[in-house]
Length: 626
Image (cartoon, rainbow, N blue to C red):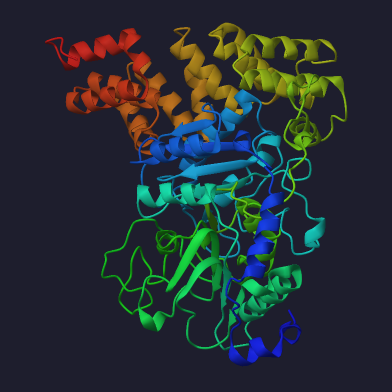
């Protein structure tokens, strides 16, 4: 990138900074802006996500619901193990899947534009770092949930281009975010070192100011790309009427003692030689900030009071780099950070962020316009709806999306879901299959089966010559019957799938489980489960099925050998805990049986109604205590 420093007045470059204090003229300008501020997206477009296992998470969600008038049913409550990091399988199971299920059940895939995570949701998905690694921020992966739900493949390796990135579009041509043109969600979080810090974020975002300075704190190395971005930021802001706001500092010392700051960007948050926790600035409500650091969003665990970032030997959470939590504590309303090294190519671009925010885009839009990649390392903290300079409302048609009667999905999402199924064209059969999907997601298993039966009646579906559409329909019909407890009918479709493909792991496993568990035919089930296990020996639920069948056949030593690794990998599953308890009881390991039974009851209280539960409890506690 070529330097744009020649576009900046000589006075700024010579002295290192420019600051014109708020004057009467600025107050007049602010008053003009204030008169045009209008609502854009609202709380109806927000899905809140809280972690019931984290102190204060629900309180933060409730405060935001009240402040932004988010419908109370637009809150997904997860139960996730606390910690900064989560494995990818656990992310998919305990975070992504429940959020996707809520969106599908409520048919709000299009209405929801913003997913807002509250305190206690893990920050980082574990995995190898680097250009082809799978490590990423939870937030950045969730941004792609809409795309994944349509059926478009989203590989976990490396970064993916952000379709809302604003580098190649003039700002005056960028529209407010909607699903009319973008198949992603904008994800932010309300977090900080403490619950009080997160609550303060909400209050500042709801009452932002319009008066204040923009501090761009660059070092003196003018040849560095980061310095060029900061110079470009100053140039664009001044050409857009914000000349009175800009402080561009290119001296070795940090800018200090400025009050009412609305924008802050720096190389490294602080001068590392100073060993202090944050800039000596006073932020106004509505202030946003961004820095060029590698892992400043690695944790929201508060460091000790004596911690000095940037000092050798003073690491906190694995690094000596500063933390964005300190900027939240210092009073910013929105800030970006990285969970691990994003490289220059993945850095948040201040030359896009600040011009967008001061032109009227909301906090989430402004940051996402400045993020090159998704499925990468960035975290955005702040209220997505904070928009102190918004001057025009978004058209209601962009958020009030009608339902497509053919698929019973929101129209924009429906169009993308159909397009993600190549080979079908615009056929009625395709729409019936998608209609069955949407009904199943809403819990209407009978309606799903009706749509699938109608689909299959319209074309050939003979065994041994199965079209792709028929195979999918059979799979979904089996699932619909399974949900309704009609196991014999479900098994008929599993058998059709196996007749077409004897290595269909899904059908082999489910048919085996149904035969053994619900139809009392474990001997018939064993060869099916054994074949599934030979095809997927590392799949925990397939090994779970085989282990349970071995128990039903009286082979408890083999059952325990198979089930114990599954219990270690999938201890959050009530069925796994329950079956482990039964097998532990059978082999006389009663203390472990009691703990597994306790966990099973905790995960699914309805499990107490099963006969095996009462029998296991009787053997564990002969005195009849619970």
